[in-house]
Length: 259
Image 1 (cartoon, helix red, strand yellow):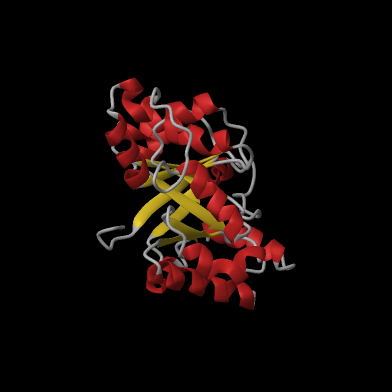
Image 2 (tube, one colour):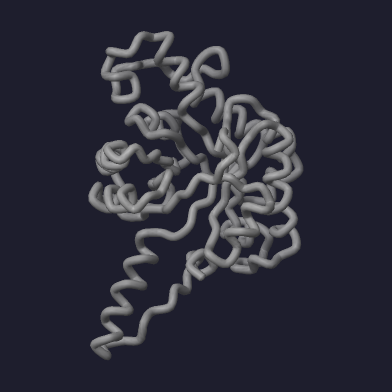
């Protein structure tokens, strides 16, 4: 992204390290591991991070909202970055930066005895530098509440990606599933404009139908597809050959992403 390119990402709901390895072998730049909606343990996430690292593929862990430990555990497991869902205000964003960046940017609790610190083998100055510069933080903008402060959020030092979440945004706008809502379309365009203006990157979810449009708008981090979608479609198509069932149609929030 720093070189002007577009980073590819795929979302994994399943916690098995073999699923992460298959995704990494498939050629994606990044794998999105989810702990907001999925009951995956920290141990499972740690093994998935290792599986991706074996193929030089980055990992983005979407964290559950809670204590500061929820924010930093994936980083200490050597994940490349975290996504913080439902950033609701400038004050909320500032608190995330405070707990996820070291001095002089924030006050992330210091350890260094985990995988990201080389299990105590990385000198302190080097540890702080690589943690602040080579680990990315993504703010997920997926509610109407932060929109009035969006430019101030975008200008905040200490984070890297403004990530537009259209699914929950439709719900917040009172129109669940309406991806053509005028305010949603306006926000989708506004996020990459503000990200570019303030030296950040814009990210979102996409599909084969809107991929080129998103790139044209300035998005440089695009997640497409998910392991559960791929399995439902593949298994359904095979079962349909036997006449056991019609090929399934994805009807959840993933529907817009799977088209």
